[in-house]
Length: 244
Ligand SMILES: Nc1ncnc2c1ncn2[C@@H]1O[C@H](COP(=O)(O)OP(=O)(O)OP(=O)(O)O)[C@@H](O)[C@H]1O
Ligand SMILES: [Mg+2]
Image 1: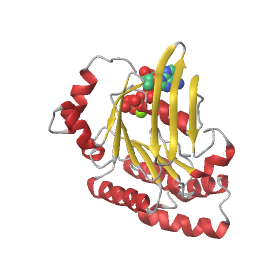
Image 2: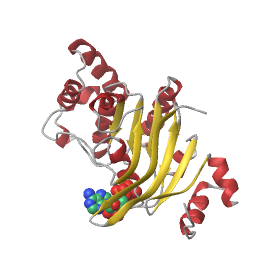
Image 3: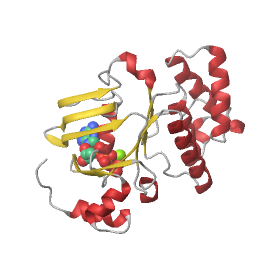
């Protein structure tokens, strides 16, 4: 059996009696690239917020690298790029990176090198002194990705990482994800782009807070007897939920 980096077991998350997650169970293999897909409101971001320790499950258990998600030890091992911007708008790009670097207790000299490398990667080296509020939407996204990569995480959690990112940079993001994976980083991402889902090793489809299908991209096509993931997605989300 492959080693698991993340395991959700029968996770329920209630908001005022509404079950955003309803017995969600799934796991991510070490070194895997797992794509969580599903309609708006399916529960993807809620699952991610639980995984990154921001909110607690109402019921069920979650294991991340052998820890509970909210334990301090596991925090630097998990890089997180939220769907909503979590940057300080009135700080510059570099100041944001420095702030988060200090949170992770990265030494001054390492941090300087890492920030230079990451700004280069997200093509924002010339924008280091610009306050985040004055960046374009895509540039803010690129800054968020740089923050997620700061601590060289073992698990990278990306909530719709390429929304608003231009095609060229999107290709370079994907190259980086694949390079990181080759280096042993485990990646979980959510996406509404089926061409991106296609690149995942495994896809989990959630709807109404439950996992309704899981498999390789080809496995899902086979299961639904469809020829592309868009059709597979529609076929699965329109089905009635049975059991689980
Ligand atoms: N803090 C909250 N309080 C109340 N309801 C919430 C809260 N967070 C999420 N929800 C609800 O939980 C459900 C799942 O939301 P979630 O953000 O996880 O969906 P999602 O799959 O990420 O959707 P999208 O594709 O639009 O990002 C939605 O109905 C949402 O309104
Ligand atoms: Mg979401």
